[in-house]
Image (cartoon, rainbow, N blue to C red; front, top):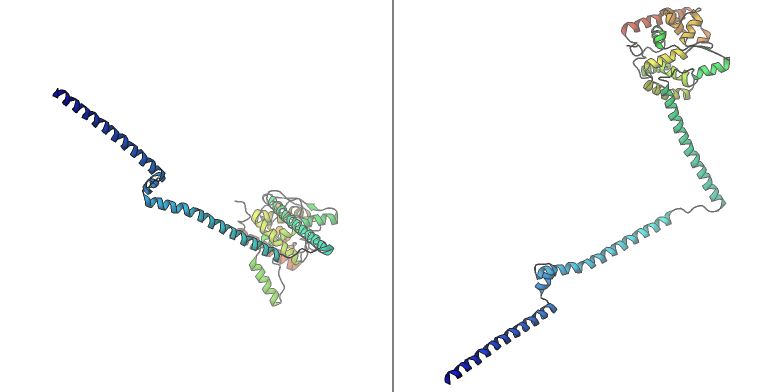
Length: 343
């Protein structure tokens, strides 16, 4: 009887303890749930920092300051842009105010029309000049390989006389006797200068200042440019135009081609042009068959070919012919013909 009671009492006590522990766990879980819900509604600084991907309250505060600064920066930038736009509009307005007003009325319209016409004429003049210069350069350059049928002076004489005598001969066909005589007579420094003999110009200027008879200072290159592209007669304009032509000839042609063209377009009598026609006209033989003396006699004619003849030279002209023949021989001996002598 006593054992039954003791067992029953211990069982009741054990059941009460189990119920109490279960109740405590339920109560604890309820409290934890309430605390979790409270934290989710009111997170701490660390939790906010963790949610933002930062490491702590300081970083959260820095992030917050940066987020707050962005709108302020945007407001400042927009204010600067508006200020710049205001300045630009102000400067534009000032420029518009300073711009001169267009003339109004029929007189103003007439002035504008004339100004536009003048501008168009100047533009077309500039373009036309540029095209002409290009064409002239191309024409001069092409004569390095193309034998010109006539020079400008030959054309004028053909129109005046109704016909001329001219037979083109290359420098190889005419030989070196005539080119050497031409250099000795007209341009002793032909192989040394670049188209203009500055030393000869200086000597001519000294003769002029001292009152002596002025000798011609034109080089073979200048005479070729005159006979080929320009006109005869004393003219500063023609002398000025010679220089660009001489420069192009020296650049594109070379010395051999220059003296070859010169000897084929030089005038030796009325309507007689070139050494081949002159040799046939005066001596009845080709230019390549002329002796040194005959070549020198032809060169004596060049300053005034219409009034001279190799068969009726004055004593002074005969002495000059002998001097030219000796000069040609010296040129051959010293090799001063290297610039036009085929190697």
